[in-house]
Image 1 (cartoon, rainbow, N blue to C red):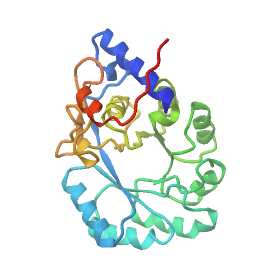
Image 2 (cartoon, helix red, strand yellow; image 1 turned 120 degrees about the horizontal axis):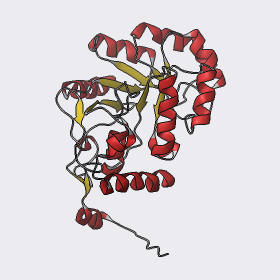
Image 3 (cartoon, rainbow, N blue to C red; image 1 turned 120 degrees about the vertical axis):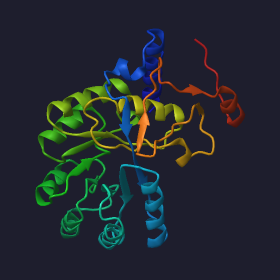
Length: 272
């Protein structure tokens, strides 16, 4: 993530120096990007349904819920009864093994967009076997740390969807290489979130404009996480679930230096 921070800042500075938007420098085309949200495991079923209702009414174009053993089939059945038409996906965060094959097969009935990382965080072998046994598309998340890992996962048919996270792959350069490889092999990608504040979120917006990012990502509004974000303007999502991509040099979002200084609890200075 440290490497991504430095590299992405260099991309932003290059875009500003050349008086072009960052997304254009990256090769992006979209003027707006579709947005989804991720909802964690809740204390009660009703609490989960209420959170989904709020996000659906806010316009988000994909709802992702976390699952784990004991919070899976029955929960999804309840969600589908309440929201039969929403685009729905699940994220298992490596909570299952192949011993859970029958349960994972049973999720096919819920017409999910994907099941994200059902098996071990670094696995592509068992995922390859699982994908052959279920109809739902598997999305690989944690194993996608480089183009080389991505290539091997695709060649093994370990999943049909790839989640690209800028911090995890080390910045825009590797993210673009992964995107291009997936695009050439007809593998849709989307941008996952790592609980970024505004600066990281602005980079995710720029990356999501590349043509292979055909699925709604986890790039949601600043207000979902912060009373006040560290950028101006804050990231906002339209009522129909899109973020408009700024058409100005750089990211289009400026750090709020005074606010950042006011909430800083520790700093270190480096000199060359």
